[in-house]
Image (tube, rainbow, N blue to C red; front, side):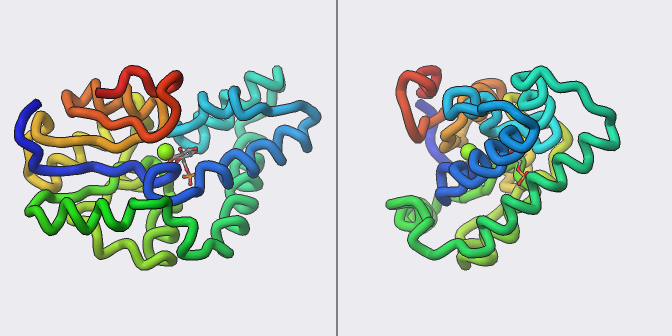
Amino acid sequence: MNKIKACIFDLDGVIVDTAKYHYMAWKKLAEELGFEFTPEQNERLKGVSRMKSLDILLDIGKINVSYDEKIKLAEKKNNWYKEYISNMKKDEILPGARELLELVRNNGIKTALGSVSKNSMTILNGLKLTKYFDAIIDGNKVKNAKPDPEVFLLGAGELNINPKNCVVFEDAKSGIQAAFNAGMYSIGVGDKKILGKAN
Ligand code: BG6
Ligand code: MG
């Protein structure tokens, strides 16, 4: 592989244990709409934007609603999610994440956040993790969710590092695909059966 000059980290499910809260909130919404939503189905939502996730969820439940109703449902999910993350403790930083951030920075390697979540800054500031990133790309900066490479390419751009010298850490299948699409090396965090495409 090429020389590593930057590491780009996804947030939910890589730095912090928040993937479970996204799932809990979507599951609650599904139940309110009258259908089951399984962890297997949830894999499709990881790395996907809030509105796109809602579309997938409604498709699974075979439910049709107006655009205005979708906005209300997405807001409802986000309010539950924000409630869950408001009580987050430092021990919900995933094991080794902070240590890895320190290690790469101490070795002169740049770091970026590459998440499509609009709640990224709330989480990073709440857990005092913001200082570990040289660049932060979140859901407020990107138009296209993963597997589109936009989020990672913007990160490399802000760091002024060639994509081929970047390593991406991801827990989502769509995220591994986004890294591939960006021409970056990828490390899957999770189940090999799901993230098999990772380097
Ligand atoms: C990603 C998560 O990091 O952010 C997705 O993997 C989530 O599950 C997406 O839908 C958008 O998050 P938010 O916080 O903007 O609703
Ligand atoms: Mg993730």
